[in-house]
Length: 425
Image 1 (cartoon, rainbow, N blue to C red):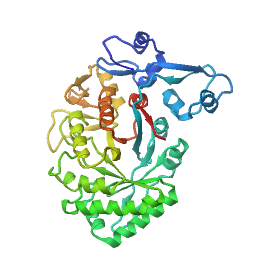
Image 2: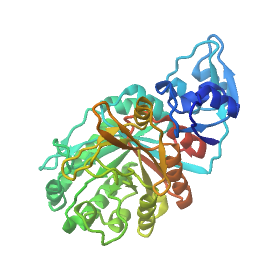
Image 3: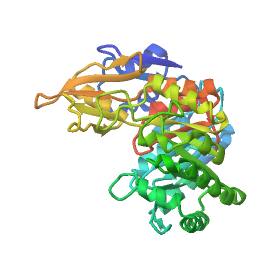
Image 4: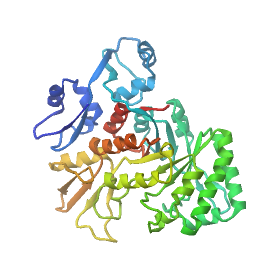
């Protein structure tokens, strides 16, 4: 495996020749179908195929997988060009296996809204253990605000992926309600009604676990939140359902701020089957230009979490997005634009600027000037920043990773995942 940093004048073909790999491999592993002009400073994932197959007439994904003794998902993982589709044509070259350096098996979860581009999702699901449709809300009486999730559940099962029900206090306005959380956590009758609704819905929809996300919980409700998760677990575990809880990215018991104080790591960790560390959003929509998930900060959260929660319970949060800020940043006024990691490269290509890499945060970034003369700063993720996070998962023996989210293509990330880990399915 190599990570190649593009120099001025290089092409996908010249880089493929340099490493002795097929050109289509370089193109598909790095979403270069969408970025025909490479960008100076761009990081590319280079993997060497160890076995290939030329498709003959009447062969199918299933017959080829059977011939080589691998799963159809393995064939999809090794061939992003298929994008999870079973369509083949005679003469097509498929990769049966890549070089790999697998250290261990992990669980992989990702979130998706019902309006996700299904073509994008189909390309990602072969790399997944779980899919979590986002999100079921809660009424003040303990009922559910239902989600149009049937298509996502069906799609997950078609790839052997287990769907998890997502429960949150997110309101229609897009914010998390601490008042609604407090109502639920302080009223046993409402809790019981909500738990009954959750159990019924999970069984009716064939969900296989629950992912709970109450954010901005009042500090005085933090222990009650842990107890509520414990009640859910005591009801759901005997039915074969796990309970996973999201945690704000804390670094100490005494960290101030409403986002953090309501999440007691010890209480949540003791009561849940697993937790997701939301290790992203240091750079965020309303804040100044920063890396979304700087590795130093991510490591601090993981180290604190491990002092309260066993490693085998922890999913590390991975951001599948970046931000584009218009400069100068003005506190209270500026708003960054959410972009995909592939779109970040496209922006750099369109504007003819080189990509930089910040060694402290281990994150790529660049600046450009738009057509109206305004300066912008962009921070995003690439194979280098993702590798740092995967290395941390290995170093600390964490259970796996959880992506926010599966709404955007980011192939070099998933191909690196396949290179470093076996995904439990």
